[in-house]
Picture 1: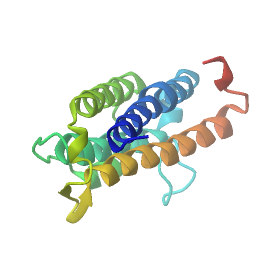
Picture 2: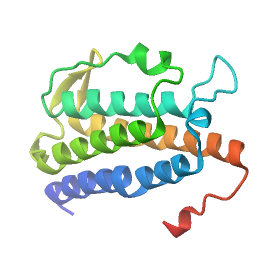
Picture 3: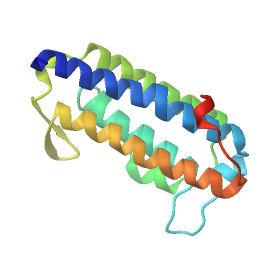
Picture 4: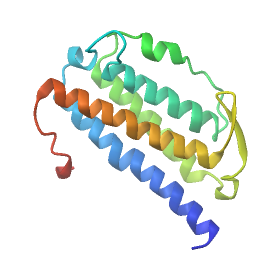
Length: 163
């Protein structure tokens, strides 16, 4: 495998995880829940599914759209966790889908020869490869939390193998 083919494979797999694996699972969860359930939190130290969705969108925008795509960083991380119930599930889903489509567009057009170039993201020097890896693993972790919270609330199989 050449370095170019590795870079292509890495980016293609990240895009697939984000859009074809994590997003459909999140959608399946949201389809099962009311707006009230999406904003439920087991305690004040935990996040609701709504907060996690805002956080995933903010993180992906900062790391990919700003870090790799050159957009201005407008992230307000504290607001992602401060929201308590003002945004309906349909709007949260629209936001996360829109963010992931923008992320996919940046990744599809990203110059693979720049994967090892350094970027300044959240005050840290990271390679573009690290940024893509971070967003992918970050989405995986919080998607798992969304799945767990959904299963705790509805107590049924989400049938992910049917997706």
